[in-house]
Image (cartoon, rainbow, N blue to C red):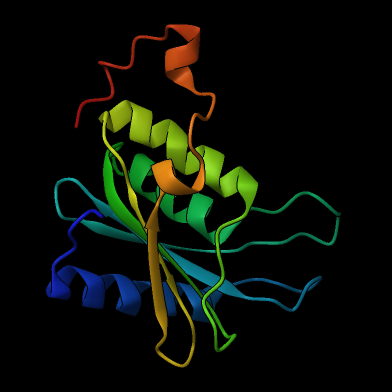
Length: 148
């Protein structure tokens, strides 16, 4: 399992909770917050953003990753997802594929932390949750311009 320092975990939880407060979920009424820890030690938050037009939203995990990318960071150490449910919720399949793509960019696994509103935490990694996933390497893409 990838090691995440206590201080890093606390910051991830704090930022994911901020994201949860900002979620826009008029269709599902299921707000979700996330935060991603970059290899450089920066944390970027995200939240789910739905649309009244079905299928036009984005999940909190992808929002957090996109926020980091918009700030020039492509390599991640960990990502956390939090909801208002007491028990932790896993990322959806689309988010797992998205996280896996950036694991291939960074050339290392990414810790996935799932937190419930009651403080319960579950940990895994993208390689454990989505082994042998298709990604940029399968296409022979050169990812060196996305420096870590």
